[in-house]
Length: 223
Image 1: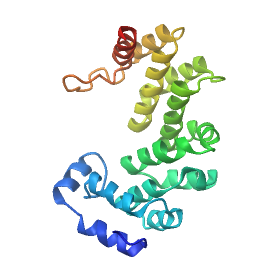
Image 2: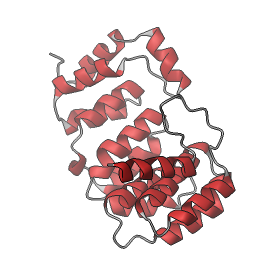
Image 3: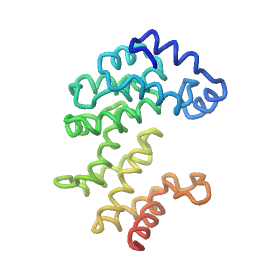
Image 4: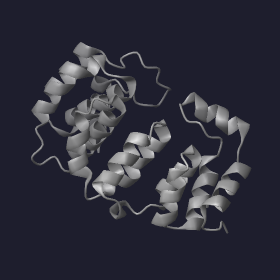
């Protein structure tokens, strides 16, 4: 059983350091060497604990921050706290887990989505677009999807990589979920050509928006 204090958790994570895991993680922009299955087991033993989560977050250590996210309660944090954490979350895995596991489940998700989408920091803006994809997929009522396509068409081609991926996901989501706007979404994807040549393993769907849209729509129509 992992003791519920920051020093013991840091010692546990340090003991799990694996050079092979670090090499793999570093290829994806993450700077830790802890196997994620083992990391999740540590968090499972700790259970939800917002006080400890904040202490672990404040260490700045990537593995500790991943554990912190896993033991956070999404509704425990103010919008200002989530904004501050997001701006500190520069490592891809920390950024993605924070957005997907905490911010999306927070009562502040819509306010943060609107605040982040046009942020001058592309990493922050990418979180806004990730939340926008969530809105398109799960609660599109009141969302100006035609206006979103305008923004994607104007900005995606020249966007920073992480922001470009997030905008591309929103483009694909609109094309998949909105039959009326699907032709325009596909046309934008074809015209911009973003991720058209991205290497895709066999039996996986290409992230190129027109291909992604066509594949998911075809699957749904076949069921």
